[in-house]
Structures are given as C-alpha cells and as structure tokens.
Image (cartoon, rainbow, N blue to C red; front, top):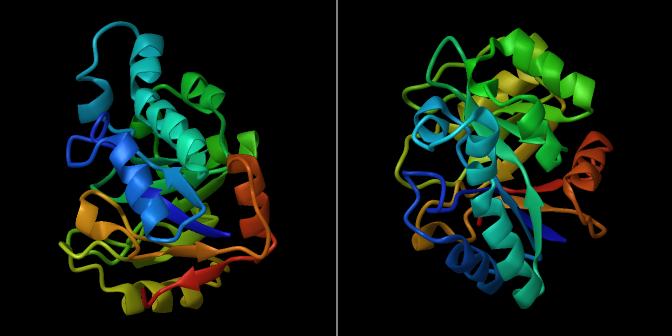
Length: 221
C-alpha cells in the first residue's frame, strides 16, 4: 500500500493551495492507495476560527472530513494525522495514530512544550515525529522526546536538507523514519511517502505498522 504521509488541504491550512477533494484526486492519480491529512494545527489556524475551543477543533477537522468523502468516492484510504508547531520555536511535528477525539482532548496542543506534546501522544498511544528537522529555518529538537523523524520531505520550495536529517536521526538511534511529499500544491503529488506490505484502514493501524518497522520509504520519487 502506497501512502502519502504528509498532505494539507486549503480548507484548513492557509499555505495550501488545493482543496481536499483535488488533493486526494491528485494523490490517487500519482498511484497512492492512501493519504494522511496533516493539516496545520497551529495557533494562527485555530485562533482564526470563531467560537469555543471545541468549535475551533470541529472547524479544523473539516479538511480531513472533506478529504475522507473524496477518498470514499475515489477508492483511496484517507487517514487522520496532524502537523503542529509547539512552544519554543518554528519547528513542525507530525502525529500519527490519532482519532478525532485527540484534538478535542488537546485543543491547545500547539502551546505545549515538547515534553508535554510527547507525553500527550504517549498517553494516547500515538507517535510523535519531528518533520523536516533540518529545513533551513528549523533545528532538530530534543531527540529523547520523539518517536521518529521525517527523514525525507519532498516539498520542492524549501531547502529540506534531507541527508542531514537522516544522519541526525541515525546518530540518536531514532529508528522510526518516514517520508512525505508535504503536499501544498498540485505539483507536489508523488514526491514522497511510504510503501507498506499490507493495507491499513485508519491512523491507529498506520501507527502500528510504523512501530513494527514495516514501512519502505519513498525517497527518490
């Protein structure tokens, strides 16, 4: 099963240019059988939505839900994930192995310290990864408070320094690696992801496959 691990929808992520349905269609046309929606769960996103903290989370989940509807029509599995900044810097983190309840339980995740974010993921049973840790404006954060690292990011508009990210991850024996296109525009389809030997149907099954070391990374799309 070929899965896009890092994709955004324009319904939620301000930097994304492609609506959920078109994003899913582009991934399907690029040969993926699954796509993980990792919209930005950041202060500038959530705090732009009206209402209570719960209302904001509900609005945030619209990108995933629209992608899920499109996936059902196209025969592609849409999986829930998250990309979020946390306190202490501009770095991004990816979370896999979550349901919608995770967001309602952690509506200000983007304000957490790395230790708090890692603990919240551990308590839920989710995986906490640093995304593109060696991108030009980023720095690697505490490796002892990570489950893994995105060692390949295919976004063509950033200096991701992927070889450096892999070297850093290997240095600290962060054994769960992942790859993603970091889909924001149509040109990004097919530039990263993983291949699993069998199908997964939700975020929890995906996290279990990652823990078991079943993922083959797409690093030369």
